[in-house]
Image (cartoon, rainbow over all chains, first blue to last red; front, side, top):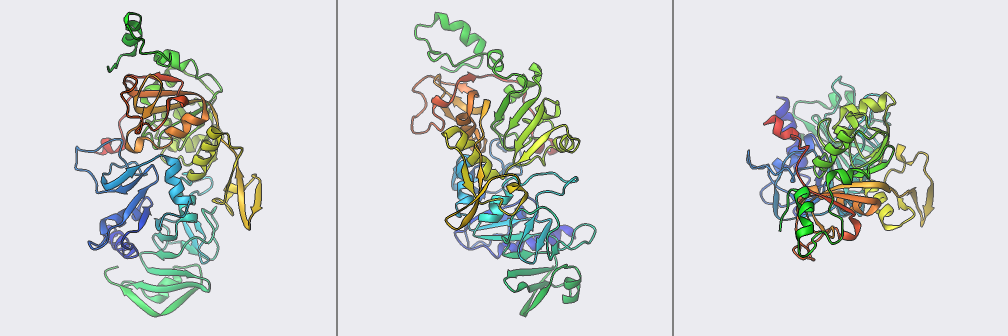
Length: 220
Length: 250
């Protein structure tokens, strides 16, 4: 059941992509987005470790140890793909040449601040390319569960964890809702079929403005 | 001419009509390891171990040098890449963009046994480039309003706030290439290129482990990624190979 939800979330995120977009997908649920790109659009997926054009997973036994994604898993290169070094890879990101990044989150604030790189004393992964991506992609979409494993809201008034970037998030897609970050606050644009507006408000530690045009995400 | 046994290559060279080691850069592993000493600053190519030389990592572990200051993208995995050196307790300090794939590095950090500086990956690349390119620092706004700006000089420049990020250099750099010629011109393989060209520029002594050494002129000049000017020592051979995580899962 959990897997089903993750896939529907990834499918919903894929709807945000447009033909010709240069996209970076974070580790976790964001990686699944690649499986739901509609047939009528072509996007180019950027990999931090130095290439444009991530293709499908290789056939078992045909993996190339030198061709892996940023998470270390073997991938393939699409026709038209290219390799480059890390300096160029991050010139793409920092230079604002990336259309969309889809990232996971530990916390997102109502102003669009993102925290996803460290829980002091507990989880010490480091930011990797996350700060560059969140700060510099033209659009930053967060794809995450609405609450953490203990049911604590991930969407908050102000992040308590060290920030990845300030005011960088444009859209939040969760297993309960789709929220747009606007100047006036978080706009509840879409709601999962299995959730009520009250439940979303309950599970969110920030002010929510319910859109007059609230849509339902089927199957979620 | 392709040589996989460098010992044989060096032994043969006196008999060769034309000296293929004309730049004297091709060395044995032991000769190369002489540059890596206790307390030195060691920069390494690789991303999650992809593009980190198994041969040189094995050599560093066998030599047992200590108190290294390591500079590289990540902490590898416990049994892959630079992670092997960290887990062997040979490092006292690390500058990296993340160590999530090496829980032992995180443990050593929390226990105060390993000093870790985290740098955003794009900033890391620019700092290494600055070190290699003779640039005194770079202005970067990634990290403003986060822990990254703590303790660093910030300036307002043309209406925007920037962190002044300092260059990174090293005593020795270890990199991994698909092919090298005797001058040290290099070509890499796919995503194993990553930080190699930058490490080559920013290290006082750059040691490349090339899977293959080819004759001068054999590499197409248009395809050379790192010109040999940045390479001091060339080694080749097998050893220290690890299993990737995805191989273990299979």
